[in-house]
Image (cartoon, rainbow, N blue to C red; front, top):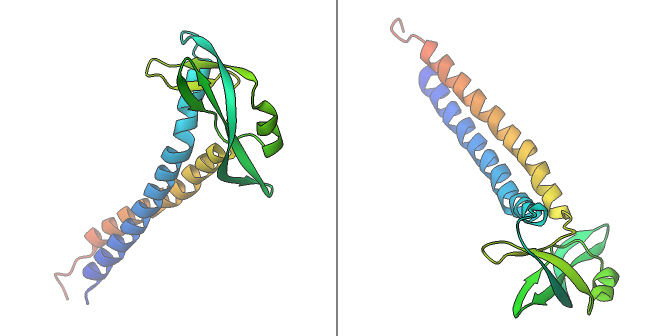
Length: 158
């Protein structure tokens, strides 16, 4: 196998590796951090009306922090229903049942507690983006370097 073909195959493999890592980093960020960023923007936006909502129940999530499950609280207002993000311990969530909380309701009827806090999932998203995305970016740059090296090889005299 000649050098140009070997470098082309190596560049393709490294590029594929880089694209997969970049996609994983971006996908985890988009799935975990972006929804909480949207909710945080709703909670901060003072043009959205504030409603009082009744906490109806606690909802266990699949998120575990320091060996303890995290819970959401479900709430209802004016015949509508919503949930907070997973930031409460079981005791905190159970203690809130029956309480009234303030929520902001966006123009598309998305409700977010006014005292919104990001959860551990958002942190995971922010960690995956630079780690996996960074590894992917470096691999993509290396693949570009291999393609440049491939172009510099002159097979005319072999």
